[in-house]
Length: 369
Image 1 (spheres, rainbow, N blue to C red):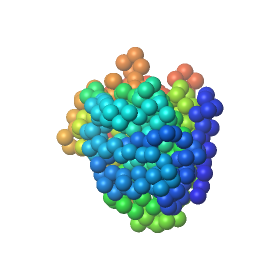
Image 2: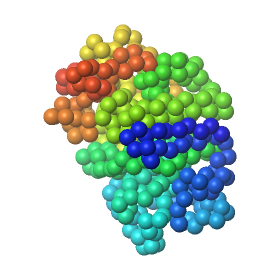
Image 3: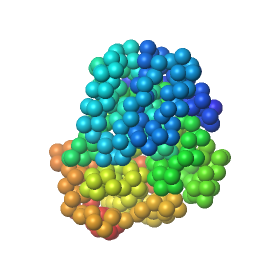
């Protein structure tokens, strides 16, 4: 078992550990008891993960003499809503869970975001543990304390920062992950290489076949290194006021694509298209070195990820949705852009996010149609 510490400098009591290993669900009771003691636990998951792991997780908690109840909501990004948050909160209230309770977020990114937001707001906040079951959730969404739901105007626009007490990444659950979900998770891994570690990016370029075949060593290295990168970034900038913005590479365009397609695409698929577009934008603006976009596109393609805008997506709609992105300021859409693989752009005036001319953004989108 590997243990990675996330020291939250802005709130020392909010620091936590991420544990990575095989067979950790069997040890979940003891891990939770130590890191997040509570009188009762609400295990929140979606219908897909609940069918696979819900009852087993509750049983492991009860084996450790912990009181736990299972709360399931319908699977899919379309259910990552205020209505789902309200229903789960109401059900917990009906079960008389008090402020001495805790939440266990079991599942992929949607379950983690929804359950985390429930924990952040329930009785003004209760502690929680993240137990990610998808590759994307393990290496990205379960780390950093961002919790949110989607609204018609866009993705993740209603939420809160709420750090978990523990993240438990059991690599064994990746065996049940559908191939499309595995590939989607690799979009975030490629992103980590682009924004912070050229050597890791090289490894991902070489190891696509091994990762997609679920080679144990390749997956362990991928999960561990991506977690290390994200943990280091969020530890230094909990509230995304500085360098944490680099984690948004590909996400301004990617989130807009998700919204305009009514979340028909997997998150990682949309982010892959977003990274391809934003790398092209960085080159067009003279920020990225020549060939950077080609290399990013090639790496994403090795993992079978989409690179072009879906045929039904209108560029005008993407441009409109980006205007209400959380990163927009004074009507200008801002991007985290790359200098070269392993290095992100920062300017003295605009920091880690650059306001790009609308016409340049439009041309970058047209280039990936």
